[in-house]
Image (cartoon, rainbow over all chains, first blue to last red):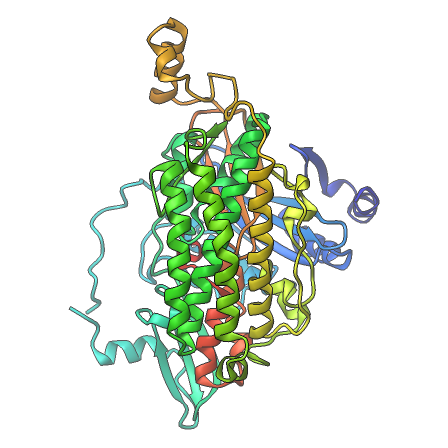
Amino acid sequence: MNELLDALRETFGEKVAVAQRIGQTVLTLPKDDIVDVVRFLKEHGFSILLDITGVDHLERDPRFDVVYHLYHLQLHDLVRLVVQVGGEEPELPSVTQLFSAANWAEREIYDLFGVTFSGHPDLRRIMMPDDWIGHPLRKDYPLTGLGPLPPLVRE
Amino acid sequence: MAYTQDQIVSQMDAEPGRGGNMVLNLGPQHPSTHGVLRVKVELDGEQVVRSEPVIGYLHTGIEKTFEDLMYQQGCMLAPRADYVSPIINNLCWVLGVEKLLGIEVPKRTQYIRVLFAELSRIASHLVWLGTSAMDMGAMSPFFYTMQQRELILDLNEMAAGYRMNPSYFRVGGLLQDLPPGFPEKLYAFLDGFPHWLAEYHELLDRNPIWIERLQHTARISLEQALDYGWTGPLIRALGVPLDLRKTHPYSSYEDFDFDVPTETEGDVYARYKVRMREMEESLKIVRQAMDNMPDGPWRVADEKIYPPEKTEIRQSMEALIYHFKLFSEGFMVPPGDVFSAVEGPKGVLGCYVVSEGSSRPYRVHIRGPSFYNLQALPAMIKGGMLADIVAAIGSLDIVLGEVDR
């Protein structure tokens, strides 16, 4: 694992910050490098994209974290990538061309956080109805919803 | 009021069937979808040309609800994601919070947790076996499997008071110690179950319909499986012995002697064989856990995390204060984030917990293995027959509760 992290530092230099948090390796990187870093890790044996999810830090700028978890089948090690995105229309590159598993996960983040993924083949809502307003997992979205429920039957 | 026929068609025909192909809407209310999964299928005759699973019908906002609950209350919510093996979700959640707190529970608690996690794995595999055999037209296995699952639910009830979503594990310990009479009842189940497992084999193994329908069905390559993030029995049926209980032993799994069954064919029949042998291994683990059950405390001593005994509250001022604080405010968890992963019956079950230092989690995300496994369905059934879709869905062993969360 350490050799792999050294190789990563050599390739990407200062851009990727490596840390250990509660025994887990965390890489923090700028959003434009996410595809390159995921490709690098995939080529070096991280063959399963376990999970992608988002975190909304309402008070912070940039506002959102997008968190990736990759698994190495030979070293049996887990790595977490954290990418910060913000702005009026948060957007970052999609990793669907590297892992098909990212397809639904990115759709879920788009649906529930309103973060868009450029280059995603089919970016639609996945959990909520197509005509839903708002993104429920954002911190400024109330637990009780944004008003009355939409009608069950569309006219 | 229901959807009219036109509305259903207009929803389906974003890309209408080409050249006389038929578009069929399977689900969301269909017994073979094991919940509320909807699959849009384009058929050429009986052959599947294209398909698309549509999910979200069971989205209940579990992750949002977590943010409003104290950590200990999360123990009630986590099992509701995968309601077929609730206690493993429970385990994943408490392990995550305990990692953030930096505490370790006593050995006895760890053994009891392993015991119940493995019982839960058997119960989950029994549901899969019964329902997927029923999908293939074999009715009897369903009754035989449900009957044995009832005995496991009885054990849940005995320990936790609940049958379906026991929430037996708490941050820092358990709800209570094993009740009196529990070992006898458990051993009765352990002694009886191998007979029934042999019965299931008897019912299915030499059944020509079962074999014909399962062999060489819904097969995908290892490369595709990794691409879709497959884990658990599905990837073990492709020859990859990935099992977090072996590679990252949590909750004292390193103390137990068990094998990780694998197959290489990667078809529905291989998944059947893997899961059947996993039940045997789980049985071994449960027996070892009960035989070697350590004595000692079943909870952490820290009363700022796990509430003091009721009898103590009446005698000690401090105990009363801790009790009041824990049930009005909860305990504080240091800031940080952790991804706790356990081996669920369907694959790697993960729980990503972010804490900002308060008594409620800032963000909780559940990595349901079914969510990732299900994505591969179009690749599995492409070019196959319509009836094979049912076999494919059955072999994925999805639980829509953890797909939609």
